[in-house]
Length: 260
View (cartoon, rainbow, N blue to C red):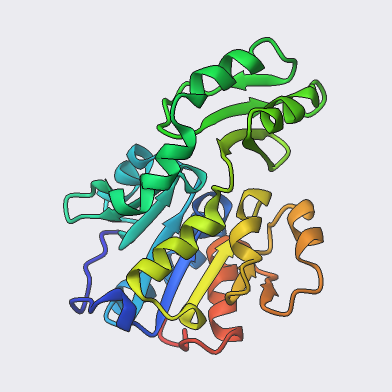
C-alpha cells in the first residue's frame, strides 16, 4: 500500500491537529486495519494534520521506515529519546535543527565514554550496538539489573530512564521526549492546545505529562498508567496502538475520523 498525499500541506503551525506520537507500540501498534485507516486518514488530510514522530529510535530507523511509503512521513522527528530534534526532508533524511540541539550537545559533551566505562560490568545491562550521538542505550534484564547503575548515572550529573522494564537509557540532564517536544513546539509556534501527544511506555511519560491533550494507548505498560492516573488531559484508550490514537482524536474533539 503506497500512500500519496491528497493535498499539499500548509505550515504545521496553521494545522488543526498536530499529532506527536511515539512509534513502537503506539503509531506502529495495533492491528493492520487500525494502522491502515489512521495512516490513510492522515495523508488524506495533510492540509490540516501535522505529524511529529517522538521516538527512542535513531534517524536511520525513521528513514528506513518511511521509504516504503506504507507509513506517513513526519514533518519533524524527535528521536533518540529526545536527544535528536530534527526536520524530515523530502528525501527521507532526518536533518537536526542545530539551534534546538545546541544545549543538548553541550550537556552531553565528553560524558558518553565516561558513563560507558562507569557502567561497564554491571549485571543486567547490555550496551546496544547502535552508535547514538547524545545518549547511551542498554538492553536491560530486570531480574539481573544492578540498581547501582541508577546511582552511578545520577552522580555523573546525567539522567537514567528505565522503560518497558527492558530498556535502560543514559541521557543528558533534563533531556527527554517531553522537554524536547515542548522546545520544538515553541520553535514552530504551534498552539499546544492543538497538539495531541501519544505514547505507551514510561519513556513517553515526560511528554504525556506536559499538560497537552494526550493519549495512552490501550497496550500501555502498567507503570505508565499508574503515573498518569487522575490526569484529566490524558485519554486512557481501550484500543491498542494506532486504534487508540484514532479513539483519542475523536474523544478530544479534534477531527472526525468518519472518513477513515
